[in-house]
Image 1 (cartoon, one colour):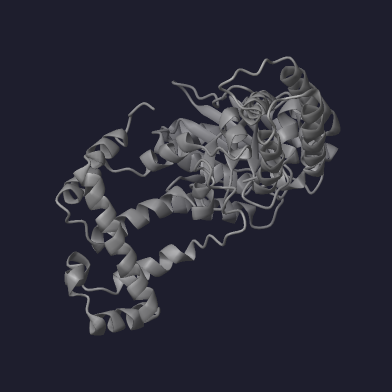
Image 2 (cartoon, rainbow, N blue to C red):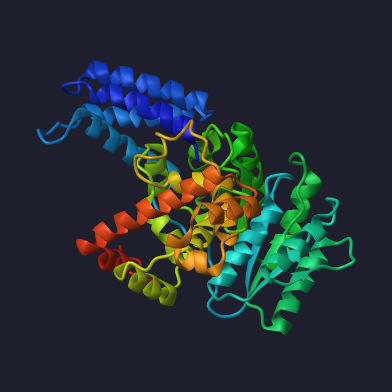
Length: 444
C-alpha cells in the first residue's frame, strides 16, 4: 500500500537521521525533497505546499531534547501532520439501532462500487446486521448479475426489479427490507465513465426518495487528481457523507489518498486493498500515516487476526504447543486462518519495519497453496506423526501434490525448525502469554 511513497520518504528521513542536529538548512533541504516526492505522487499542489509549510514551522520551532534524534523528531512531526491531513479522527458510518439504515453507494463507473457494496454487506453481516443489497444500476451490462453473484457468495439477498426507474427500485427495496425484517439496505447506484448532469440528477433523486442515513462516494485511488476532481463534483451535487478509497493495493502513487480529505472536506471511512470480499478496512488516519512512514500498522494486523480467531481452537492449539504435540494438521489450520486475513503482501506491510524492506521481494501468495497441497497429500498418520516421513513417503507426497521432493524436504525442514523454536518459547513461558493476548475482546 503506497510502497513507492513510503520508500522515497524514508530515504529522505534517513538522511536527516544521519545529521547531528536539526538546522534550518537540513530541514529546508529535506522538506524541499519531500515536497517534490508528494508532487510526483500526484498530491494536489496546494495540499503539498500547506503540508510542507506546517511541518517546516513546527520543525523550526521545536527544541530538540537530548534523548531524541533529529530523525525521530522530524518523523514525529511529519506523522502528526500526515494524520491531520488524512482527517485526524476515525469516522464510523451511521447505522440506526432501530428501523432501517440505508446506505447509498455512488461513484464513477469502474471505481469498484459494486464490489465495495458486497464487501460492506459482508462486513456488516458479520457484525450482526441483517443486510439487503439493492441493484439500482440498470445501465451497465451485467451489473445486476454481478451483484447477485457476489450476494450469493456472502449469503446476502439481492433486490432487483425489471424496471427502468432506479428511484422506484431503491424505494421498493426499502419496503421489501421492512417486510422481511432486514435492518440495513445497501443501494448500488449507476456510474458513468465521467461526470454528467443526467447521472447526477438521477443520484440526487434517489437520495431524495429514500433519504439514506449514509451516502458513500467510491473513488479509485489509482486515478490521482482525477479522483479528487470527481469527488468535488459529486459532493457539490450529492453532498455525500464519506469517502471510500479502492484499489490501494495497486501501484498507486498516493495522490488521491493524501489530497481528497483536505480538498473535499469529507472523511475517508473505508479503504479497500484487494479484490477479495474480506479486503475492506475501516479507515484510521493515524494508521495509514504510520504505514506511509514505514512504521507498519500492528493494530490493524491484530484486529484482522481476531476476526479469524476461534477461541476454542486456540485453546486446543495452546495445549498442543505446551505439550509439544503440534503437527501438520494444526499447521494446515493456521495456514487457512492466515489466508482468510488477506494477501501476504498486505499483511507484511502492516508489520513495523518490514514493509519497506521487502518492497522489491516477490511475496507469492501461491506459496501457501503449495504448502497446502503438500500437507493434503499426506496421510492422516503422516500429518499427525511427521517422524514417519521417510524417503519413499516424501516421493509419493511430491507426486501427489504436483511439487518436487526438494519442496517437500524444505517444508519438513522448516516445520521441524519451527517446532524447535516453539519448544524454546514454551520453556520461557511465552506461549500462554501470547495466547492470552489474542483472546477476542482483549484491549491493546
